[in-house]
Length: 571
Image (cartoon, rainbow, N blue to C red):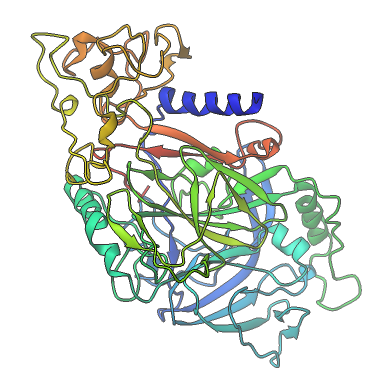
């Protein structure tokens, strides 16, 4: 009971008292490459060593897959330009995300450029029927697959038969090589997009993006359509992110570095030219999402300070969007990950849709109220998503503010409690419920997808501002509860929602001194963003640290912004 109470208090605190501003904001998306030689589905990769930067200032010796040479223009996806140039280094962790379309023949040429003493290396593609020959010089048949000897190259070929998110990783001495960083992701896009994914609510969502000037960063399939994770009408989505979980034991990496240095120049296959790194006992100290730990994972994709860790982990969404979470467990441990604000509906594991044996047609509704045939979909709603080593899953997350029992947009009749002040149009929005109770008919409105039952409901039971009594909570006075120089946040979405909802003199933003965010009246959070930050984190306390320092490790923030705040995934 104590634990349940504390979790409830934490969630309420996050919902009503957190604003996170980033200048510039950095978002995630799911960047990758379609090829490295200009032919779709052909990838020339290398395995090499380098160092990874960590938030505690350490550079950790690691191995990773990378591109033999820079991919040609047009190979990077999504096609929209990023704030920093998209790149594929000769070593990166995770390895390059390979994005292909269902039915494509995929060819991966792997060259082993690891230190000679590291021995052979390889790639496994679980879930696909892989063909390879092991007769050429520089190739050796290993226990699980054909391996590339030092300086050798091996070719793997398979058909991208199953849409969804898939792992790839070394099949050679996995306890060492996967630990050192030899892993990555394959995303297979469906060959066709179900018609309902580009109509109804999803079409309205695209209209909203166009209205506010946003770019669609979803991965596209071969036909140019967007918005489905699978060839199934229940797999539509509006935004997507890829997260790869892993951990590192620095002792193993230090020992590998020392032995590599001691055996530099040795001849492959000769006595003593091999590593003898002890991978047990295992005591990881770094816990990674996409190769970075908190707070580094909130920096932009392809940021130059992380030359070998190009991908970040910093999700954003608007209320009502269906957000596709692509997740892979790439380490040794299972990581119980908790996504605050809602459960995650599991769609598939390792590219296999979770289906029931029922033949009775069923249906469910999108947040926009569109009925969707969902015969066979049987994925559970998960409070904690399990990231099993070597396993991938796809899940749908959404958040609308439904059921909060207060209006998350900070509405109140403008001017009613403050006669003579100019009306604030964002405080006077209407909410017209659809069949499911959502404001789905107004895609250009700030409160598109608001749950209308809570429209105009105040958050506070006993307010000190101009919001009427009757809400579910009593918030602390921002002049009392502060975090350093600034107030802990806003319980409302949208620009200046805190000002509009808390003080009679703030029905207009022209009054420079009417802020409640700082005792000093210097508003640190930009006036054009009022979002909610929901902590997404491992439920293993040790894993939200970097070398036992909190916060760090497997921790990020899902930032929910109202529609007028443009989510620019290029950062």
